[in-house]
Length: 166
View (cartoon, one colour):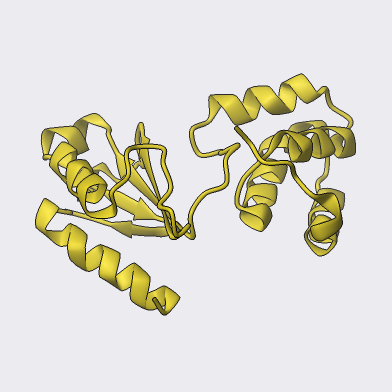
């Protein structure tokens, strides 16, 4: 279940989002780009934030929810500092991404769509990242890892923790 979104704690981020919305040429056609911006600012798109976006863009809330629920990139739940997107597309699957997914799950102690208790990692399967030539592919936040093997997982996790100073 989503936690309650607290607008009073997010005023600076909302100002940034409002400024971004104002740069959009047409508000109705800007739903996806505004949702991307909102998720980059807040880390997720809880229902109250979706309603805020709908009102700012003057579009039905159902349209915003429809976009959020359709695209796997968007999340209504708070994610970890590192979102590990595991590509489950055909090229990646054929090249063994299922073993990589299992290894991430085992080492982090979480299943797909879950976040570690410390809030560092969220594990997420996606349909396709669009980097088939690098299969099997893992994308952590904005960084793409190509030709990933199960034995690479431990080092990838360590690199993320070092980056965070943990």
